[in-house]
Image (cartoon, rainbow, N blue to C red):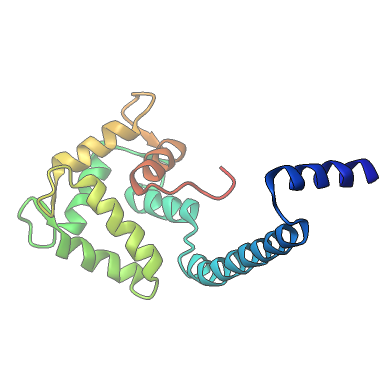
Length: 172
């Protein structure tokens, strides 16, 4: 300990720093950094708690809505059926308004989930025209069908869902 103290005194003398002044400023800096960290946590934690979405549950919920016959696989015909449910005016495209209305029927009182599903819409809207076509849904099916067996199982769906929403489940 005395060797360390002697070493520090030599360094302080060499650079012309008053040891007491240096220690005082260092302690103030540490105190300031701790206060900033605490302030950051106080601001961020409520926002994080509010915006939590169980993304795996949401992916599974969407998978089950696609899987009309509940056989554990999504088939191309089921994708078309799902598409028609959103296309309320039967113009062969889903507007952001139509999509928003359908999402509201299930998630109106859950803004974080609603926002995630709108993010999914934006990810599927490849040409940014605020409309999804059957070909957008077909592209989703092809992207999700990792093993190319013309069926999308739950694990394949989850993977593409996480990719498109940009959210991974906690612990993954």
